[in-house]
Length: 497
Image 1: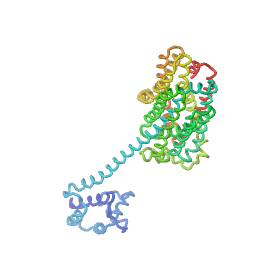
Image 2: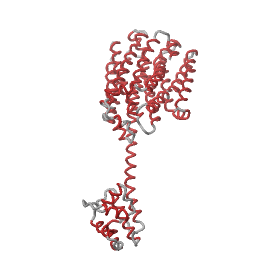
Image 3: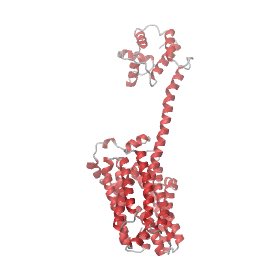
Image 4: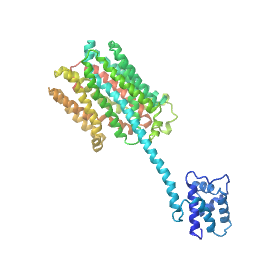
């Protein structure tokens, strides 16, 4: 277009300088479409595109470029070098003509790159903080569940009750889970993730405060109902939140459920200690202290916000489908959940899995004491089971990916069945303890694998409510199983699990 390469270079430098973010070379003049085309031709930019038309229009608003477009219209002499030099004195950041374009392009690309890198680091820090906080809350859930087995003999000693009456303690917990799972469908859409998890942990705290003085058994039963309600909300929201993450979701689910196993592994040490004391119920003061820490952390980190907002802060994909934004949870969520065939299939799987986990973790201590002649220290066997559960959920992630989600479930199930049989037939406390720990190891990865699969077959915006409903149904069925098992001796409990 121009006879002099210098003029062409300075014109390109002028255009690139304008196209940089923050350029202030525009005015309110609005040239004609012919000016747009002439400038686009001079800059070798296709004038047909909306972006190029917008850029060339704004570029041609300066008085200097008006004179340039006028010279192009009149087919006059090519732009003289002296005019180009005038541009260069104001616009070019480097002295040499060869470095004009590279210098401007370097300035244009470096600032966004640095900003993007800093933003990504900040998002990674936020995502890590979110994961740690929700894992600590699930640690508290595991702490609660791991305490039941070692405290069971203390319940029977304090209240002089048989297995059937004591099982009401677990039934009340399951009723709370069912109500919490059903109400979670409404609360998730009404108040969102941040408020639901805080409400769940507050209900935990209320229950522990009631149980700490060792009140009459009916009061303990009611308090465990409150615990079940709170844990149902927390469990559903935590699984829904982590399964909505777009980066390393399977690994983070394994870490989340390993946190549950870690809590269930640690709590029997404290529960076994308190179960031998007169004031055994003071164990719930420790549980209350952990819950207070979780409540404060959940409030400070999540600030009562919804999942979508939190995922945006951490750079994760939002789980909300735009086609469902205007749907009202009260009117549509229940029918959507119950209409999903995958929800019912996953519920059946979860009933079998969690039935085995809860029965082994809760009743193995009683089995060892009554059928193997174990003493007070038998409560530590429960820690072995949940320790294996924790190790399996983290240490076998690589094996899950190597074998595949479907085949690995079959492998783990076969191993667990063989180990269950050895517990029933081998009359050895040490052998039974090792077998229980090994069962925990192979059972551990199953639930994270199920939730990971659920995130692939269920709508993402329904993940939280579906998990809440599944866990509610599962706990109710397991409580009914406990009532049936109480009519048999302890070996039957383990075998039927």
